[in-house]
Length: 424
Image (cartoon, rainbow, N blue to C red; front, side, top):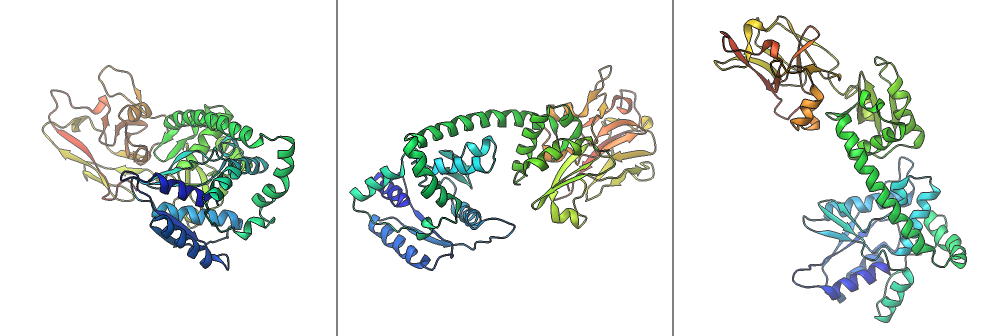
């Protein structure tokens, strides 16, 4: 009914600038699914709207309920169907918002869950809009009946084995008797929660910028934050890596014991198909199966390379690419001041070098941030050391101790030749 009302209302608003098409998802779960598809085709023809019927396969594995699995399959297919510049409009109502907030609350969710469904959000290559969120289901039904529109009632909506149906049919009628304005009040609370969540996300993004080291997180930076800011940052980091946030116990473990463990212990926290693991001063998020198979178990190469540069001006790097010293009349490196052997390592945090004569030794992290080096590149950047002293950060910065001055006779340029596919 609600989707029928939305489609009819939009059909009446069509102009040359507002183009409209309809999509129906056939989940293949109900014996009447083909009848529902046929009804949608008739309605679309009646309204003069092009329609596509898309079939999906619902996988209820990994402990997901049938409701959750069907929803995931539906939105995955809708995201694939959406074209650039399009918005997907769904007919969620004020009553749907009420049910969503309460179900999230019963599950013990945080602010993001209580914020429930936004009226507008990014989706696929475009946006997801819910223009009916302030309309009640009763208002829509009256509008639809007044226009003589027919709709299909999904009989699974009466199956009280599903949480949403039980809430809708058993709990909410009693609650509305006591609190008639319940739906509007809860929707207002959801808007407050969404506003608070936006502030938390802004704070997490600022903390993430300071703590990010390539795709990994600095343990030292996380330890400098209060426990609640650590958890806030970790949630955003996990979501932006395309994973589901773990339960409270695992998140607490990540924000506490994982950070306090010995650097050489390589501790891990696993959930679903993901794993967060610590290597030295970095936290990394990886695919659980890949880690179990021995791939991706460390966020960066856990090794040090010796580079006898006088014997070979080229140092091959793990995963492809190389560092190379190339003779150049205006090269920035004084070869006569360059020790041998050199060592090539990767970031562990706390590295410093002096990039200007007489200037202070600068934190490499600050230099990377100022230069806007992409986060994905920072953790894979090879660093050149002479003993414990950092003398070059890839081909971006050279320490003053090896920088060629006016009287330098033998000069060279350090080049970081990256793999063809980018950093490994």
